[in-house]
Image (cartoon, rainbow, N blue to C red; front, side, top):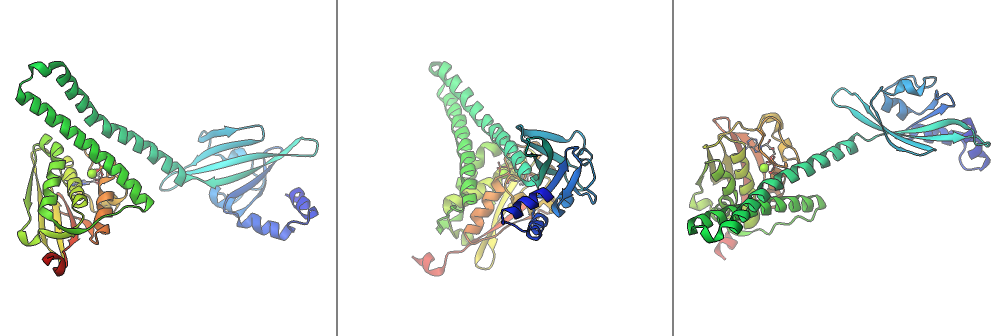
Length: 358
Ligand SMILES: Nc1ncnc2c1ncn2[C@@H]1O[C@H](COP(=O)(O)OP(=O)(O)OP(=O)(O)O)[C@@H](O)[C@H]1O
Ligand SMILES: [Mg+2]
């Protein structure tokens, strides 16, 4: 480091005290090693990131957890490695860029290593891979159903009875609706992230929203022999909401209630008064959502290992429900049904009196 300092001073750029201050303040760890790969200098961030009190005098090899380094990029002068360091709650991923230093005659005299915590990036990358896999998996079922039905129609059109044809068209329609809902969820989460998500609230009928939602969720509920039992009294029918979006919230909640509950169970949708709002609850007879996870299930891509029972999904439904409900001025949360099942509540503003009269 003395050589570097002298060179900088010779150019009149940075004095040694300022240089030392910058070296200490860097959030990236910086280590320097000599020609024997023994550490000669280390800044405080290097100690913090490598969780090691003594770095100077230690051979670099002793600092690397054996067998847990992955080479990412290599050229003659630069080597990029990713280290996975075991930590208390989870592992920490460090990216280490090694640049060799040479003297005037071109002889290697040591190396500078910058150490950066890339745990968050690595997690994001893993999440992205899992997400792509989940999307492909989700697309496969309706696309396979479509192909199989169309194949049958193609071969047997002339011999099919009208009833068989109707059943086939029903399957094609349901598969197309499922694909549409999935693509809609993907597009919505994109616009929520981009901050361009919009709802258009107008005086709407909650019953009509529910009817659309039951229709949208019907491929799932009917396959699992479940019924939706609704109780929306007339005085709670009018809400100030985006009807399509509210239907989407209900469809997502009913789909969850259906796929995470046993076959043949019931799903209950009720509306009640909540001080200027209508409070809608969707309840099921499944295992429920554990209290510790009730806030996290609204995070995009979060899927509970406890409740998912092998049901497919990509962890977007509740994130979208929350965005819609909150954009309409309401609130969504999760409770527990008396029998232990999941109970999701959300509120929708009531129309103002003048609007109701209009
Ligand atoms: N009614 C429910 N009963 C039990 N667990 C539920 C219920 N609803 C949601 N969950 C849990 O919350 C997680 C997040 O739900 P969310 O609707 O956001 O995603 P998903 O259903 O996994 O996928 P997607 O809705 O995008 O198809 C689910 O994976 C599941 O673990
Ligand atoms: Mg869902």
